[in-house]
Length: 437
Image 1 (cartoon, helix red, strand yellow):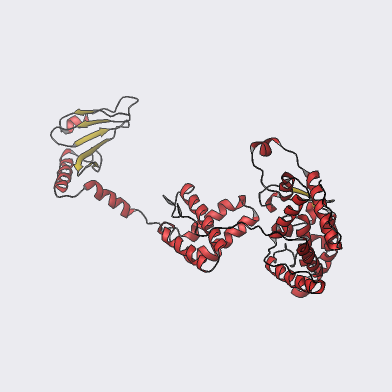
Image 2 (tube, rainbow, N blue to C red):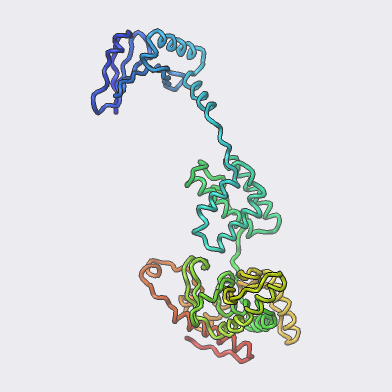
């Protein structure tokens, strides 16, 4: 609301007779010709407050006189007015002095460290993450970010600090880890700027990645698949069964490791949303190759429970089906020994190749099994759209996302049956016959 300024004599009687502003106005202001820069504001509740306005440098400042009228009379108000103008002449800004005094009187809150804000970030955002993403981000913070920067105030962390951290990781030969740390910090600081507004700007802003990830294109030949199947057959439960199920289902290693009995209905395995990378449930008709592995794995569950109980001294549970994960090396938990499993498999594959004369597969990872499955299916004539459904890749385009609600369960089952038959033929040493499906 615009305020009005009218002149009145600087007398107690004139100030006392001032009336509150009419309805609709939040205040009225009156100036005193005898007191340059001094005004009195009258508010709807009848309060009368003296102010002194002055120019300091290029700024127009205003100071409220205390206390309010009538506790502060004309004589005392004049003395404060004189003191303010004298300070201005001496180069002292009375308004800035008051602002500094207010800041000093406020209790100083301890600045939040990166560790404290990370705990808030994890609590707020982690419910919407997949298990894989949660593990990846948590490891990046606990292993690399918090040990280096966790004790520092969030606002004190600079771009140079982050650049140095990433460079140290790169110097250790961990380029992909450096990219994960970079991405985790970017998302974290963007949240700190946008959500709780702890920062005005992100120190990671416009900081480019220092390492370029090259997409892997390694696929396994038929001979290498034969060697891997032969090596996996030699491994005991749960390693061998897990690897064969991973190969035959063509799903992600973390999703197969969380396979539960409760999520298998007949011959269809449902990957529930929390276990899926793209947070979408995925129904996988299991092919004969995998069903045979699971049937044998179920028989091993009871023996695995007893073996783990004997090793750890824990009591054997009365109800064996409570051990819900089909692959586990622990008392009650999903399979997580991926690195140890790969090492055991490499040893078994080398022994198998030494006996059969097959070349030993080199330079491959567990995820290459999934890529090889997609490549072989394409070679056998399966359309790429169906292969994408088998892999549970996110669809692009409004048509696929919104208008096509078909589950493709039959098509996925047919494609996995082709892949299963291919693996069976390879294991039996039969010649592959290409056919389109």
